Amino acid sequence: MPLVLALETSCDESAAAIVRDQTVLASAVASQVEEHARWGGVVPEIASRRHVEALPQLIEQVCRDSGVTMAELDGIAATAAPGLVGALLVASVTGRTLARLHGKPFVAVHHLEGHLCSVQLGEPLPPGPYLVLLVSGGHTELLRVDGPGRYVRLGRSHDDAAGEAFDKVARLLGLGYPGGPAIEAAGQNGDPLRFALPKGRVSRPEGGFYPYDFSFSGLKTAMLRLVRALEAEHQAGNEPLPLADLAASFEQVVAQVLVERSCRCAREQGLGTLVLVGGVAANRRLRQLLEQRCGLDGLAWRVAPLAYCTDNAAMIGVAAAQRLAGGQSSCFDLGVAARLPLEQAGLLYESQPCF
Ligand code: KG4
Ligand code: ZN
Image (cartoon, rainbow, N blue to C red; front, side, top):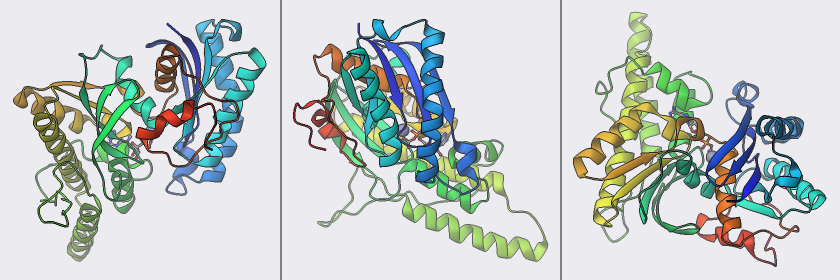
């Protein structure tokens, strides 16, 4: 049961946590959302500077809240890939320095492996293999998980990630950043069936469609056309845009596409459990639809606890504890990487670092 201090700074949340195996002893997140909101998205330079300021206090806070001292830890973990390089470096350099100083193993963690592990912070999972729908600001992937560190990608987005589509459409509707929570709030009392929107399928060169893949760029363009047409209509009558119906209809079609293709994949691949993780997993309409559809299809389902859907360090700690329990840790010379496919997460534990 490894006891781990975990750090996360891959994008715009600075986070620290102390985790024993799958139990969170303390977790703290400092969001920079307000700072980036006025630019309409994450500004990498600002993100790095804020992480440098926030991280030391967060580490002190989780040590104080849990009563755990550095001497008691079995390892110190930090997200090393993928993400913004300058931002990743903050947790990685801090983690490696603390690990050296206190004579502990350093465990680099793949951010998406962290998201996959976030579901373990809730109810226990039925025995694998299972299918994970990972939907965040940077990724939309369907992954078969055969065991810790053993992943096979079965589906993906060919353009925008689901969270990115939420963020771009929110900007179009003038709802601010981050888009997911803003669209969810705006669409709460809207009519999700008012506007028919495309479900974005990806053609195969040999004909037909990739059954488990996603595309959100056509949906984004459809929303733009719809909004421009409505603006022309409504300006003539001096009426405001039907924002609630627009937001609800967009949310509905995204949730439908994600759930329909994931359930089909689980059924066809003989996987009895569907797991939902990542920032977009916080979306209520998506969670409800997943529950309904899995019920109809006779699939078991699990969703990461709401508090651990968006970026946090507790999920990084669970991933690190698993790697440590499997006898793995990272080289102190390991750097960070902006991109690294999840299937290559094992590279983080090689004795000769590849970056
Ligand atoms: O996992 P995450 O915190 O960061 C990444 O690893 O990307 O995901 C952030 C994304 C953002 O695009 C945000 O708009 C989206 O998750 N998101 C949501 C909700 N909360 C966050 N999307 C839909 N509904 C939400 N309630
Ligand atoms: Zn994330």
